[in-house]
Image (tube, rainbow, N blue to C red; front, side, top):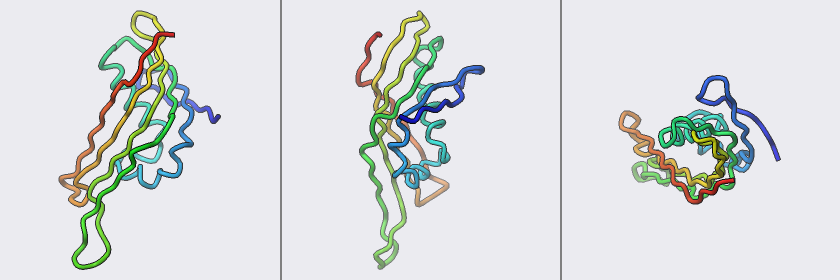
Length: 140
């Protein structure tokens, strides 16, 4: 298991991350999200932001990428050719997080984190949406 640390959005802390090698074969597509090449950092920090909206005093300890799924892209045909231009891209990451809540309880969360990037064929109208769905939560 590859184990790395990324900086937390909370100053002075870092987060253990592992399992991100599961996304390596998708990296060229993940770049279409416009979030950069370092998936360990942007995926973890995006997760932190969502977690801290729910419990500002909590702290994310670790993030594990369990699975990459629902990878889908859509293109629009370019003229009368077989070529197309990328219009939309979506990808789902199944994640496991260990957090300490503001009340000092330790929790394990299983989360579906989805990204949808649209209007990629019209850069000035492109957008990125993220959804963060807690699938399972248990106190440990």
